[in-house]
Length: 149
Image (cartoon, rainbow, N blue to C red):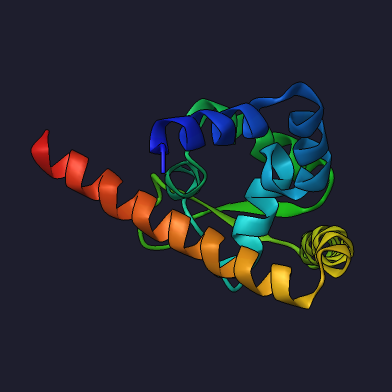
């Protein structure tokens, strides 16, 4: 097998314009405000530092601050001063924010289900296994490369 050709085909498929547009619509909940909101939702409702949100989402602290301002304005999150360290601000998701995060997640799952149903049971099973393997190996290689640096 020509792995270089396979990699080129993979990149071409992932980067094609129409597929990129489709993927952005398909994963709306994985960007910007939705990404932060879903991250807070997954944090089981415990207040979290904005700097931790930045790390989890791989965003700059400035970007997170802007997003938090917007989310707070919409009533989806609250911010309060830490009781243990008054220099720190803690962010928590509100009930309204939790509802919106759940709805975004349901919409994303629904989109994926439609695609997987059309693929059929056998292809879906192989696809999911291969995607898991791909990302596991990618993380392994990434960690190996970081160890060398």
